[in-house]
Length: 615
Image 1 (cartoon, helix red, strand yellow):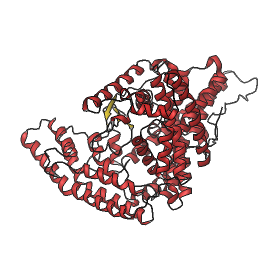
Image 2 (cartoon, rainbow, N blue to C red):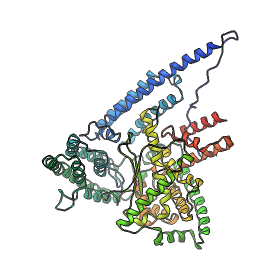
Image 3 (cartoon, rainbow, N blue to C red):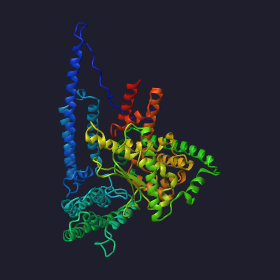
């Protein structure tokens, strides 16, 4: 059953060629004509894909950090250009590309794959143009993201040092930090001048993380090396260049840290402290200029639907009630007598549900998360026609950002497999990562969730790169949440507490619908939103605080998970009902993931076309 309105678009299916030849025409004539048409269409699609590849690489080469993410060793001594001037020039390029595409290719001349690529390119381009209106509305520095934390993260994870040139480029990037960060500080100040600033609490997080980043030698007299210097030293030593050359590179890196990185972060601290003095405690997007329109825009982008804030809020309340009912059933199964809220408290306080708060406990968590993923990976052929080639590694969130970072997240690897995908678990407060939620969390971030879907997308053949790397939050996070659910149908979650953890994770996403719209549409305070989560979910207070602080600085993003999952489940049930015995879960999953990330309306079209082809 379709539960909500999806943006409508034209059907993807091509009209079949009709045989209008006289009866006396030789039987082979239509097939010759058809073959000629197919050859012409194939040629057009080859040219279209080549055009998309050219545009993708042209754009990637304008973003040095994007090149690094793709594993391409070009412009390794540079940072992206964060200036508004560059952004406006980029919009002009997008407009030019849209015109060029329309003038060069006709939609009706393309096959189904080509038509989908054409439509996605135009839709993505229009979304970029539409976003220009809100350029100043995005917060440049928050506890969740920003160049202050992404600079060291990028250098550590995405700048390889495989030879002297790589090492010298690393140093040049350090030397370029001041100019790079200064421009983004300028952007942040311009937003603040327009009354666009995050609430006051955000600045404490940013300031603390910034201080963490510029700690250690050579920034202070600590015996511990700064994280960037330690990374550089570790990578260079593996080159075995000899003591003299290694020492020379090391000294150059220290000079760059002191003359570029240090003043850049000092300027950032000064700016953040100045803005904090002017910031208020209003939390939602409603407080911003044209805040209601901005939030409506964010909901549309994140969900790829026309659902209003009111619709999303009501859906959230309904889902919270439903999941609470299923949780009470598990309470009876384990023999717990008391209220649901009392059971929540019991789970938080019971020591057996948490790992030891020690290095050994954290290592045990990472080991068990890896085991969980390995077990389900061995059975994925039962429900999938393909699996990713890319490797997966479970990692702990780095110390410098763990206090501010989210509970868990995934970072995709390179398309060529030279860098694996990383499932990051935040183990700063070990009790916030209970054992009974580990199974669902590992499925979401690892296999069959983000790692599987995003890696397969990168490995797809016959589609342009922009589709492989497309970003559609409702699709990607909807798949992640769906991936928590269907392993239960495979016989996983045998422990009722683990099954409760699955429900707790789903409840968390349902509650997001309520609190995100509460904060940004209904003008809830941070405290009211935190209270809703602590009352209605089993998550500990610190978990709830960090979550609400995340939703505050990322309006609408949290709504995508549940809405995407519901759509994937609805489409699956529709297909089951129509196909009966012809339904194959492996084929359904392949239809969902074999296109790369797409808006939910296009996902619906693809499933409808698949059902029709099998009927």
